Length: 207
Length: 213
Image (tube, rainbow over all chains, first blue to last red):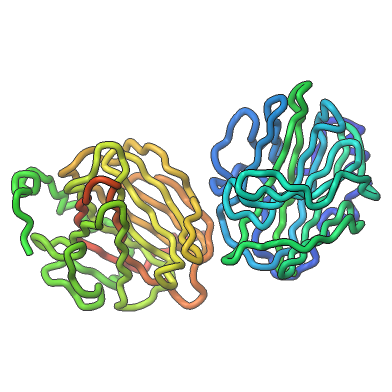
């Protein structure tokens, strides 16, 4: 789906259309345009559902939700997704992004962006959150309600590189799972109320 | 080996022999009614044996048992089998079913049922389990020990469709092996008991592709 119901969102969408599908690899390992919720994403719910061919994630206030896709395990990847800030609530505390190097619910990495244009990278290890890249401005990030950003993560061996709308944000050395990674999506709502994020055109290619 | 103490359960099992071979394809690629255990299933042991012309699996406590048939590899298939829950626990912690799109024992897909009308489809990839169609209740499944359910899988390209007693359960898109698939069987016991599942009338046909205009 590429139709937006508000003029503002449509204008912002046109602004990033040129870099929308920026995964660079030629071999597609997985892709999802969210025409329906694939069973490998898990069960649909009030806060995790497909609306107008976009996956909408809206965790309850002061909570987060993530879903790792179970279609495949991957080695190195070049992964990208188009993410819309449908309604932010608190622009600092709301965040959403891409999960990679996923092993299980207590062990994965996540690249997150906030509606205020900042991004960070976290590792969840044995159930604890460990900052890998502290929150800082992501050059080129679109901000506010209706903003659309393309997030991209590449993992090659133990190196992960992060991009926002085609601009390199950061690179880290980490610990990829030994036997292949799952990938997924993540969103968090601030204490003041649920934020809503939309995901579309998820693509995983071989770097 | 004969199972003792289970004769009454076996006697009341209703075998839908007339509907058993419901694979739709006209070309038979493989079939087995388990009058003897073909060597391509491997060797028997206390968890894997023939009983009353059925391939019977009785995994150890809290274990699963899988067996890939080595007769050949297949491209697209229409596979069906009769599966009886001889002794499955009432909490649904025991399940059994068919393996397909198998490369080896660490890489395959499988569809499994419980005796409590639950069914799920999973992928075993690099020895990890990835849900493809999560556990759900399906009314077409017959409930309880002594009941026989017919499972059918049709794989066409990268699509696999699953039927129970003739009714479609679901369809997935996946990654079939590039050079042909093996098929097999699998069963799991709960923590505190050894479940018993029996397979019969395995048949693989080449799917008949519907004619198009």
